[in-house]
Length: 339
Image 1 (cartoon, rainbow, N blue to C red):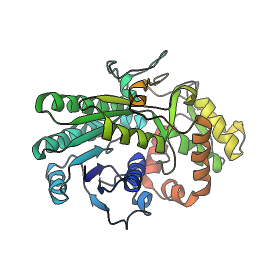
Image 2: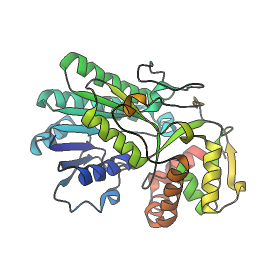
Image 3: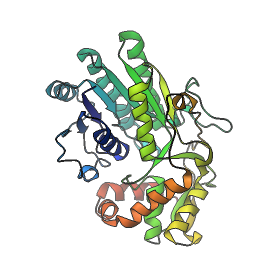
Image 4: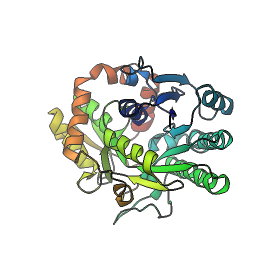
């Protein structure tokens, strides 16, 4: 691998992954991003002058643009972060998720086949497994997605598997758990709760708040993806989660945030639950552990570092929450009838 195309690199995990790769390897990195509402080049200001880094604005669903950037930069490896990722948004507009999360990977996979790329890694989610009341999901479990988002991600994965089996395209898949850290778009639960708490606004919790997720710190997630990219077996999927002590219900997450910010629990407000809300996700990551990866952050340290970043970087998120019309439109549509 010499020349990597990182799609969706201006987003949350993608931007951290670009920084991780530039710090660790002598690779050329091309960030290919459509710069939709969650894409933010401010996330990468510290690397934009790096001679190994390039940015190209484009959509993964645009076949001609994808082929052009692969040829122009002699790309040999693709890591796909480009996706619509929010369950709540998928309930409002499922069609856009199908387009980006299924058709987009098809375009990338077909390009990988045509140009004979060395590897293409599709970044997916633990949500494809559906709700897991007990135990933990392993990579051979059948997908049972509950939302248009998770179904679209499962569809992209299946396309990847088909291209591996049919055409021999060197596909890898990672299934990550709930990722937290700096520069996450503030409609997601941890930055939403943190920034609302800072402003003494309510923290809207769906239903009982007992839904459990596995919270992994973003740099740990990036290291897991890196491990799969360099050492994973082609055609295989790998779970990337913190597991164990990092599994927490949403009420615990909210209380942890309020404690760090120094605000009262009276800000917690239960609202009408969303449809198809999975009760629990849990990943068995033994397959990835066998490649030598383990997370470095427990729940307490991951939450503390995350929350304090938002406390110390208000201009970053205020530019989105106070000036971003897309954020305001979503927040009003999602919560005003529930609160």
